[in-house]
Length: 323
Ligand code: ADE
Image (cartoon, rainbow, N blue to C red; front, side, top):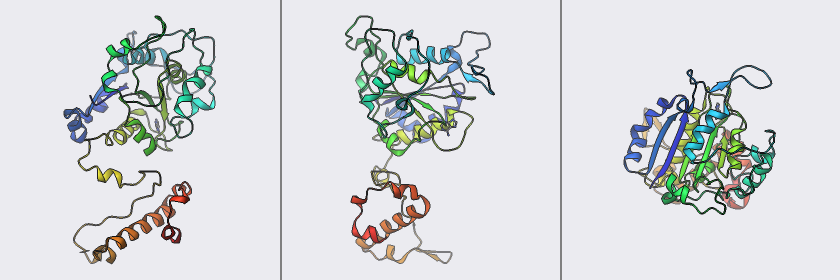
């Protein structure tokens, strides 16, 4: 039971902090279990090298596909597959991470044309995310019904493989909510100038739900911080993780009509001569709600006009329009 999380990194110690605080408690309660793995454990050379120079030239190093694949095959319970002749040219489908831009059930077909599989039988596509905790073990994966004896055993349903990547679609609250329903998440942290671009489409062709996300328009040294951000955004949504479920429902970026939150105050009503808005002291809940909604709309319009542009007009009431 609980969400199973694997993280692969060349700095697995970075994730030692997950044993502390809220996350540590959630692990004790069995809501999540996290294992951080060292990618270098899947190397065979004396130097444990995980990267190489870019094909086509240029600065920096790129993480080698073979090392990642040995690691991911083991974690996902997949056999190595020799693909049909192809190159890694990407199509629009592979460029898109979440369900925002395309139905999930179209991903495997679209990507199978990108990297052709050298088998008569395609693995069963994982259709969306369905957490099936009882099916989440390697043993059960082997036991899944296969139409051909030699067909690739698909990764357990509800497994999502996630790569942080500054050149990918933005990770949003909607993605966090969707991924909080997965039974298992496997994060691959890239370092240096990134990982070989053939890895995500290869695993998609194996029937794995693969996502690449950026956490913002800035560049970090590696995927570790980005994975921490996504992990926290996802796991805090798990039932029982947070003490107060109401505080999740009410906050910014939640729901279809996401607005920035109104400002919050606590006692005293006057602090160092600065008072709180009078209406909040009125005891009139209708007026308080309207005041907060107006402030949320006004602040969003001023600070994040991009969110206002995305609002569904049909869900604004007359009073909203005045704001
Ligand atoms: N790796 C480096 N920068 C990143 C970003 N902004 N988002 C996700 N992964 C990254």
